[in-house]
Image (cartoon, rainbow, N blue to C red; front, side):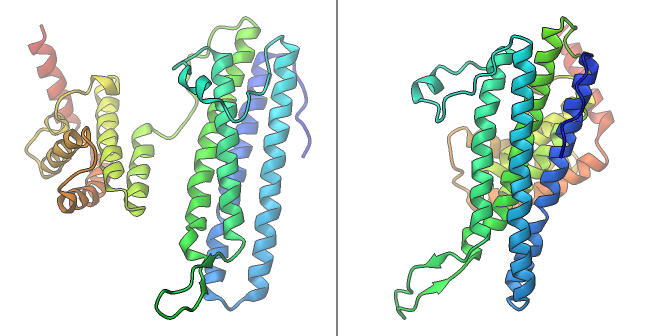
Length: 318
């Protein structure tokens, strides 16, 4: 893999960075498919030759990911250094005293340093999961029979690779955007006003709601479902998500089947402010039903009801 040609135009630099980000995301998506194939070979426990080949391929492809990250980091450090910007790599691990003094929504250079640290840790988490998927983990002897066994299922490594790789992609994409903005500002260009293309936030939270439930975290699934509804409503109402206040069910009309289930979600969201839910049975049923409700709302959003609620709220505030 060779470095793309340098260009003095800020737009060219931005294009180069965007291309690198897309390549990285594509690479992560590609290597994240390998655990599926490896898991199938393990489950079959028959094709030993195929298992060995996939194990070697898994290690080889993740070495390519390491190379891409190193090359991207070196390129951005050189580029920012030439512009007189600080490209110092933050101390690792970050001292607790530094964590206590972290600034929310900092300037671009400080945000880059924070993202660099987060990228490093996300990468370490992902590589750890990759290593777990490449070997059988020993299991303590059975307390009754005294027999030892080995199980690779219990590590959850295959699911961990996929979820941790997605985290690495999210952090790396944001880091690319921050570095691009640093270059634009250094060249005296106006701040970028157009947002980069991305999956809508309500769809991201819909996926996280399903993943949380699949991992047995009912409370997290309920929270992500609530955020999904809030962001979907905000998108339709053309307001900030923080402006979608009050029971979410009211924004959906309040009387439809979907709105009635969201009303159940509203109640659990209030309970979650105090920690784990007590009524776990009902919480689980609502969390499971919400995945279907979210798909229905996304496919056919209640635009009329949301617009009507906005109009009523504005009339009351006059």
